[in-house]
Image 1: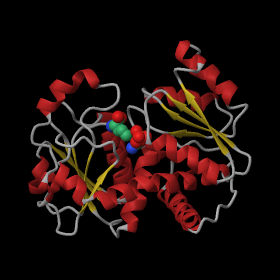
Image 2 (image 1 turned 90 degrees about the vertical axis):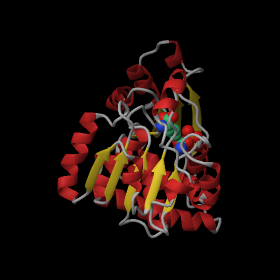
Image 3 (image 1 turned 60 degrees about the vertical axis):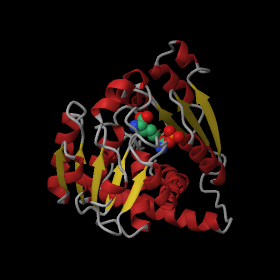
Image 4 (image 1 turned 180 degrees about the vertical axis):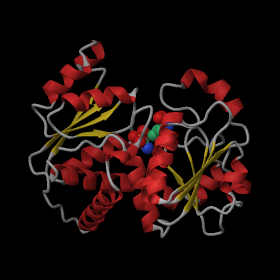
Length: 305
Ligand code: CP
Ligand code: NVA
């Protein structure tokens, strides 16, 4: 049995298999052909943080695969009143067929997975957002950018960490610029650098956003204020001055470059209104692809147990 906790749990070929499956299922879905790959299966979906895309795409996805999603907010679960994660895991995983969790510390999802009898999927932790990044890669493939140079400017957060995992597994060039004090986690960077030796990925880090975007094929960023950091807003907004992706910044990238954003986007902070609307088609293709990619992931995990 396999869990989907970070992209580094998988080889490049395995991730490409999931994307192949996702593309096949996407084509079927587009013709309203719903194949019941996961008939009568239940996906438990535990949310300790808010969500629009993750909830809707997983719940709709499992339903279209012939199963059902069970939305479990930690406000309503005994988990929210102090029942340990490991007990929650041992109960829920005897009743459902797969679990998706969105939580805070990555160690919490690792603990759940250790005690779970069924595959566990990471729907975002403070450290990683792997379902988003596999989706972003599928979107890059669709836009002919799988061999791209990617420039990420912004916070050294869960999105930046997952970009590092993706690039170092797939073997593309990733340039990350973060303000001083908001760099990526050192252990995750070291892990990515180790993996990059195998794949040939080129990873670079700095604090000059303009340098990071010079001549890239894909420009990407994320909110400066992640869930749970609301009280840091004032300090972070000051620290991230010069990191707004606007027309001038985007002009540094290649002429045919695309802009990706996992959403939700905060106009005037990490991205300008004008850039957001200019690239709205790709951004919302990316959002829609969450539905398709995660079906690929669920079907793949089901067939590997
Ligand atoms: N991108 C993403 O995970 O969106 P939600 O927080 O709305 O799920
Ligand atoms: N970094 C953001 C991503 C939201 C999808 C957060 O963790 O809130």
